[in-house]
Amino acid sequence: MINIMEVAETNKMVEQENLDVRTITMGISLLDCAGPDLSDVCDRIYRKITSYAKDLVSTGEEIAREIGVPIVNKRISITPISLVGAACCHTPDDYVQICRTLEKAALRVGVNFIGGYSAVVSKGMTPSDELLIRSIPKALSCTEHICSSVNVGSTKTGINMDAVRLMGQIVKETAELTKDTDSSGCTRLVVLCNAPDDNPFMAGAFLGVTEPDAVINVGVSGPGVVKYALESVRGESFEVLCETIKKTAFKITRVGQLVAQEAARRLGVPFGIIDLSLAPTPAIGDSVADILEEIGVEKAGAPGTTAALALLNDQVKKGGVMASSYVGGLSGAFIPVSEDQGMINAAAAGALTIEKLEAMTCVCSVGLDMIAIPGDTKASTISGIIADEAALGMVNQKTTAARLIPVVGKTVGDHAEFGGLMGHAPIMPVNRFGCEDFINRRGRIPAPLHSFKN
Figure: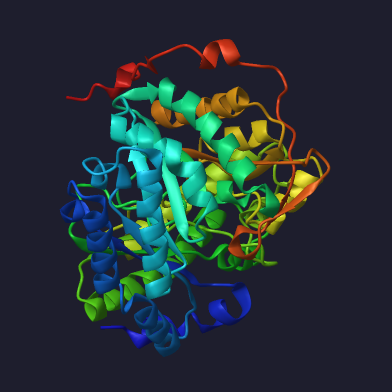
């Protein structure tokens, strides 16, 4: 039951500070759709998704109208397709057929994205995993609503460098096949380490095998709300600063909790988690970079930025866990360059580099996200950046990722346009020194010593 008193205090946040619930994501297990006949598997997938999610969009819109809080996206996450198609897919084109089925289902139920065209290969690749990975460029080039992710490492297993090397090539191929739209296929492709089973945010969302048959996960947002709250405590001590962020995060998360519980009740599926990440948009006043600048750095990327981001991330989590007993997913502050106008401005001004962003990913949610790079960047260089980011996640026992967009035909000084929530971005320079000899080694980087917890 929604507590209207809790919702009422958010009216100002919605009207003036860009508060929204970023996504209601329905997780749907497709394990029972697996089988040896590809046509039959596709039919089962379509029927199950359209049955479970037939009312997802309309329910989200009803709740948004009733409580007065925008719910921006309605999405679906599914079992990693490399598991579902293992018995029936014998070529990359077989997997593309499943992807087309997912696109058809997305259009039928009206969701923004379906995430889970994925493989989890942190220790090694099965033949099915490799077929799916090799199908990604074609699959993303012929669809608009499907997101793909590949988990290449974890703290427990180390980093699968064979998969890292392959993903550098896959990112390049995806960019080439979607070059007519500024290589936009890469905006729906992410490479992860320590990927969670319950993430509601794209492009890394999939439903892990530990999850129920269907579940509702909600991702909240609200960088603008935090920025506005901090304006009232300029010059105050770190204690006051931290308390302000915690209290604001509590209010934001409560809204998400109420939406999640109501959506789960109406749709008749269990409530899973609240992801309390601060997810920015290209809209003015909805920027994590603006928060960092309000905390006191002149421009995102200046000295002190990593410390300010660590403080922000920690206080958001502390406030959020008081508002919900089921916090999960990624939960923290996102720093996607193309989706955050403050980050875009900082990158264009030269204050923010890929190397500084990499340092910032040590203390925030996810990683090098939505970064446009020159189209002629080598596949091995992309693999090297992926490996660096995966190493940060592996050693620090956190989720990290790389969503890199080598924009074909563009270079530093140019600009890429992706549209909508994907935003736009300046092409950022990449270190031109090579790493081919490192990337071309076979096998995997072992798990760190502190992974042995048993």
